Length: 97
Image (cartoon, rainbow, N blue to C red; front, side, top):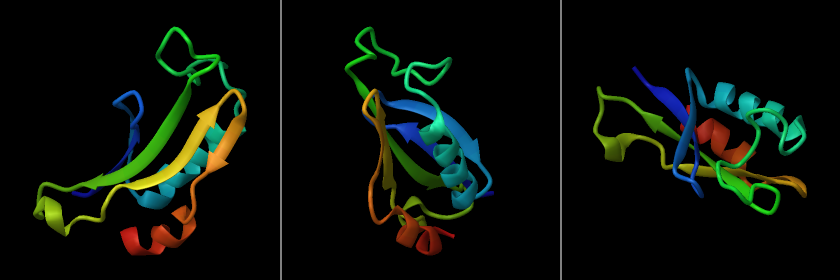
């Protein structure tokens, strides 16, 4: 069964598993609206006020070879400065499903 993983690539932290790429993007859209430093929305380092999180989305599926899966997509950077969407995450949506 294919699942889509959100990972903070900068901190090597898996942040969630989702049934579809679109579900993962919807979660990132929700996170992008939250204030940086609010609750769980903090980089896991001591300097979180000046740090950031680089979110990628990738697929896992034990029933197919890894090379047959869509490549990881760099989608979003979050920091105290706000959300910075990385194009072309919306174009990649159709390729990943």
